[in-house]
Length: 310
Image 1 (tube, rainbow, N blue to C red):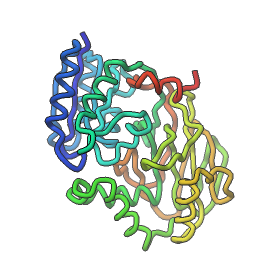
Image 2: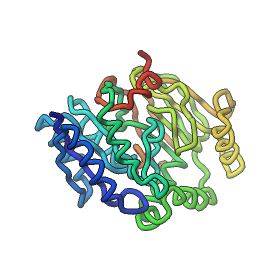
Image 3: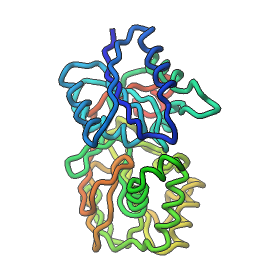
Image 4: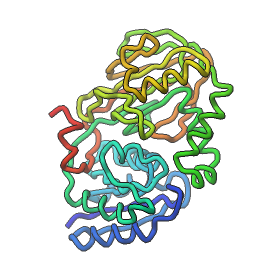
């Protein structure tokens, strides 16, 4: 029997999915899983409960929420043998989209039950994590523009819940009016890049922001992180970068530095905000490194081969 702890963030997403979640849990239990459900009430619950579950020998911790909830579970599970499962219920769900997991919507009311079936059929794979100033992340660490947008969205939870992904578009428009970036020094496995920085993204997965295939060579088990630095300043340059990423033509652009690395150090002339898995995480300076084989992730069997080197 699989013993699982499900951690639900009721603030995730644009609407309540409690009835869909109950159906998903019932589906797991009909197939032999024993599921304990806990609903977060205060900051820190998710990470603490995930860590307690790992110490208690649970087989799986299921993150029922968005990218931020997943990141908090990862912080509690890193280095343990307890696997991470995902039921996508957040506003963005970028990692779930990258993994091919269905997200509930009015047109897809049984998506969580479909995701639960994927957990039953899943392939456990050991994956790498990132570590930024001592804090683990699964998907990305962002420095600069996107972290400023994340900080604005997270400061207005009612707006985020009401608008969902559109909230990020609104705050992006507001942020672009005044954001100029700053001079930065980025050490990539000891190689120095000193230029004006709009955004630096250190990624463990290919997809970013739902539609941006920003790190096409990313693999979850290669012992490397993808580093993408966008240089320049001003709204025209920033919009140009966004278009080239959408068209998947950013790699090779002289205004973009793209590397694979084990360790990245970022120092800036003025402090820039940082986010980890779409959660604000202070400001620069920041040191980011890969932690190989640090977490077991339950993956849909059709996806397992696509995201791994072997």
